[in-house]
Image (cartoon, one colour):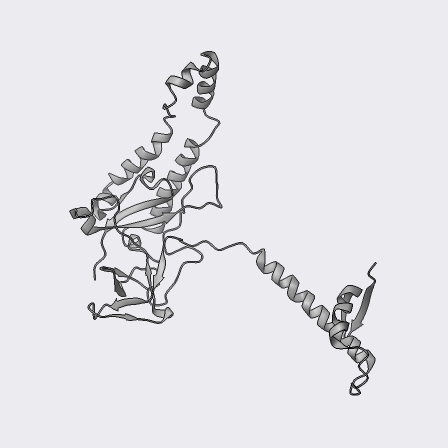
Length: 278
C-alpha cells in the first residue's frame, strides 16, 4: 500500500504518493554523500517539486487531448508551388504564409470537353458528421467562415485571386468563389432547409414505414417482394427543393446551381459556379 505525503512549501500545498517519490529517488541519489552543497531536506524538497511539476504536465496533456476538434472544410488543401498573378508562365515555390488554398474543383458532373466543363467550377460543402450520423447533414457555414478555416489578413472575407495553379486562380484563404455569388445568410438558409428535408427523409417514424410494415405483414411478405423498390415521397422533397432553388432568380442571374447530392453519394453538397477570373 502506498503512503501519501502532504506538505506545504512557500504557501503551496501538495499531495504526492510514495510511488511518485520512489520514482525520483532512484535517479536523484538521495544518499549521495559527495553532494555536500545541499542538505538532505533540500534534496527531498527538490524531488517533491519535480514530481508535482510532472503531475501537472500530465494533467494538462490529458486536458488538451480531450478538447473538441475544430471544424474546417476537409475538401480544400493548400499549395505553395504556383505562378504569381503578374507572371502566369513561371511556376515557383512560395513560403507557407503565401500559399494558396484550393477551394474549387473541376466540374466532374459535366463531360470533360464540354462548354460547361470549361467555364464552370465546383465548390464542395462538407458533411457535418458530428451533427448527426443518422442522416446526411451538411455544413451551414459559407466556405471560408468555418472555425478552423485558413484566413488571410489581405483577403479578409472576399475571394481575391492571388495565384495561378492547374489553369485556375486561387486566393490565400479558405474563402471560395461562392462568396461572390451568395451571402452567408442566403447560404445558411438554403443548406439548413436541405438538412431539414434530409432529416425528414431518413426518419424511421413515418407513415410510409408503418404502412410498408403493415402491408408486408398482411400479405405475408408479398408486398415486400413486389414493391421493394418503392420509396417514401419525402426522399424526393430534397430534389424538388434543389430544383426550385436552381430556378430562382438569384441563381439564374448568378449562373450558379446546386448539384443533386445523389450524384455525390451525399458525401458533399456541391455548388456549380462560373470559373473565377482576374
